[in-house]
Length: 605
Image 1 (cartoon, helix red, strand yellow):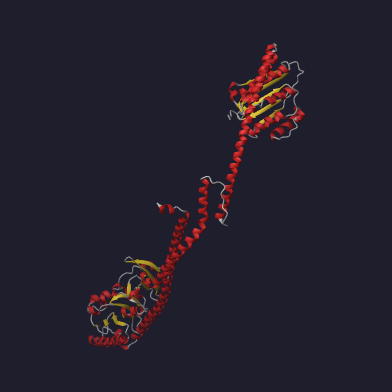
Image 2: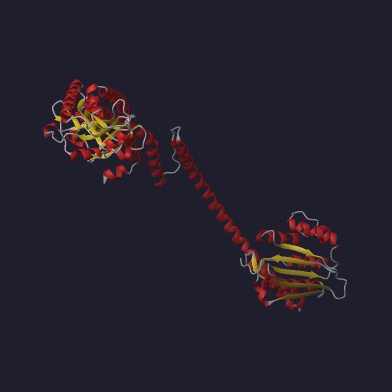
């Protein structure tokens, strides 16, 4: 539990996190350095192999050129020409003599050139002759002759006369069925169709066989057995020479990957669950590929020292990073730990505590904000106490103000009874109407009311006005009962009625007529107030509507309808409550004045 609590500390978490990040970064860096070094070693090895391949290519080309020159020189020998010029008219004894002399020449050539394994000559009419320095082919069956004549190398040499045709991966016993197993092995055959010097048609085949061991010795001298193996594949992908003799005559598994590719390259492959690097090089004259197979673990010894150094540097770096990060992070989080302790003290009620020493970093900014917050809390508590004291004073004042409406109602009620005592009914009715007007004003602080309540308020207001003007004001209401529940701002009609009475014509015998109409349209709810007064001329009406629509505070309404304050206040209240789309508008009339109020329909607050 103690260890768990310690791990929950920010300093411990930062150190652990920092160590994990360092471990990941160093591991990745070590891996990439290892991969990079391995790539460098492989690249250097590939470059070195390229130089070796180029030298081997030159040596093999030299060998082929020597064989080509030697074969031409051999064919100029008198004994060879006597063999080629043999005709059926010559006797068997003479043919045997020619073959004996020719075999001696062949033996001399084989003995003189160490890379020559055997030489064979096959004539269309003369049969076959040849052999190695140890064996001699003096007679063959017709079956062997027919098989050889049908072989690919025979047909290719005849078709490409006088070129030297090279074929690898051939067993020595292929040309001499009388050889014993102890003389077995592989050879590289170099064949050429031949003819007598002064005859246009070919009548034989010359075959010079190079021992595969000699060819492999050209590249095996620089190859250690532990460094992998090297081999040569022909155009069909058959291994014709190899440092591992059992592979000769088999198909190379790498040939499909290198066939048709560049003349030189390398790639990583798999062989018997081991990773290998395959480096190949194309021999120009033959079209063969020289391939070297190198196990990747061969490079282990070369990079072992690099691995050892990397591990040592890695471990040392971890130790140094841990020690330095521990002390550095501990120093960095110390202000935060102090801040946490002070916040705990503040939660226990110790207000107004601050830091004396503030670091100059992000922690310092947090600590400065903490100091400001701590002092602000103290100031806020002081202001809250002051506000509570002021609130108590306001509540007392409000309680005192509540006495005034009650005093006013009681006073009006006393006057009403006094008027009733002297039979002054008109005064009694006026006091009752005034009480009905004041009651909703003092009873509710809601800014909205129903249209029904607003019209009831107007009826009491008209009663008082008619007592003043001897019932000279005619008040007509035309509202659908369903629209009486429409919500409207409180006291928006009384200022309009007051303006209509103030500017109406009271000299008319019929008095002042005021009509109120309310109805819904598709888009809004409209209330119209129409009076029978003198009206407003068109120019002033247009000017007033512009001011009402713009919502200007200063208005020339004084010129047309007195102070205009009531009309403007109604317009302003509606616009503030519902938006600039709604408000008060004056409608042109031939007689009187028509004021239209636009409200949203059926909108409850």
